[in-house]
Image (cartoon, chains in turn orange, yellow):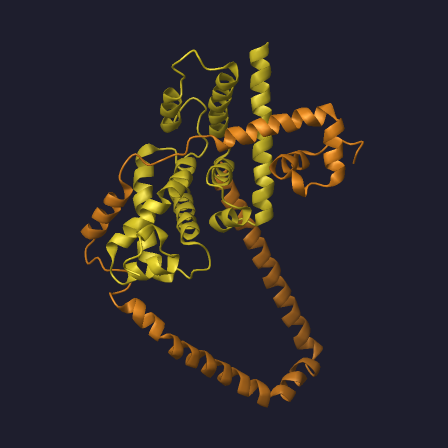
Length: 159
Length: 200
């Protein structure tokens, strides 16, 4: 490291948080005029970025939103008054529901645990391979879809 | 709780107030988060009129979805996430061009730059240089891709962490970090090339 210049990431990291930089990087910057120049440029840049004017709406957002909310036909609150209190009161009911779901899935799973084991050990290859192949195809298809969606999002935002 | 000043209420207290019917509490949310929302809207939406509609649409969505807020992040982060997604969906639907020509749009930047012109000659060279640099930097930020512009604003102006920016944009923390590195590198290089041009 001491002979090599710092990468862009290392230089920025040095400026942002010198304490977390490796000792070798700090040592190198101390002796290398090129890296010192880069560090100076990044220090200026970071200072400038922090001093940029913050954008602000030039109208009263709260008043405009309140006006639109009042004008909405049949405007209702997200919950009716008092519902927030009721929501808290609903908690025990939710716990009971969760317990019921656990019981309804847990009891059959426990009762048929031995049979469930044989489903995987006794299954014939003629069934097993198509199931594995179908699972694999669906998985690959979903990954491709996600990748395509991700690419699409970045294309739109950086057009 | 009702005697507590509204600006020091916790997220949970303020949401409960709104769900209990206190509309004034919703105004408080708008006032405390509109700076952050403006940061996102101004960086992603080029047209002034669209920004106005966008700001209102964002807060209407926040209001209507408030009951679904799970307190898994700060309320301001959640509002910013809605702002980001709303802007993104608008851009996707209307196919608004996202790349702003260097000499057009961004009226707010231009107006702010006009106000920033120094009036006295007593200022030191250093101060003038810094003002020039800041003005140049403002232009260069405007030339960055919108996502980079947004990330720079959220990190350097709103002081948000990589994690918070990740929650807002839906990007992994590592991606946020690496995009910020790239954006700063682009800014540094364009500033240096401008400086060299001026020297010639």
